[in-house]
Amino acid sequence: MGMVAKEQDGVVTIQLGGSFDVSQYEKFKTICKKYDSSENRFKIDFAKTLYMDSSALGMLLLLREQTKGDKERVKLVNVSGTVNKILEVAHFNQLFTICEDGAD
Image (cartoon, rainbow, N blue to C red; front, side, top):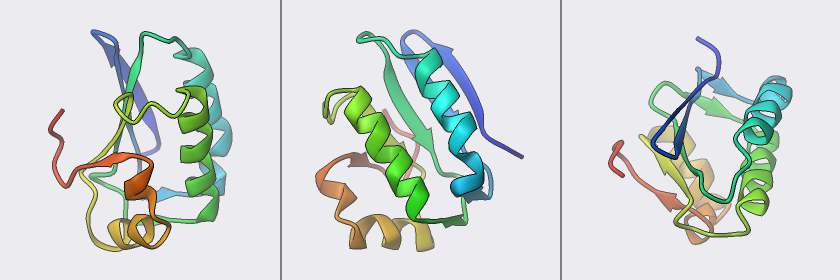
């Protein structure tokens, strides 16, 4: 499964596939641009993601910039395992709300 986005009630959920890496850049950028609105909040769902690379970290930073650093507007959900360790090492818990489950 690739990356899929859906919007409901101002919440854009981006479901990631098995790998969140440089090959996903264009699609992620297109989704972020499509839903670029000061009203929208983003939920990045890592439930099926087993791997991410440094470009994925960069994509998340671009989304953070788009949302003007508002920690309440971007949530990383269903984060576990290796992906969680990568985010911890990069101190992304200081930049984003990170949840082990899909809670809002």
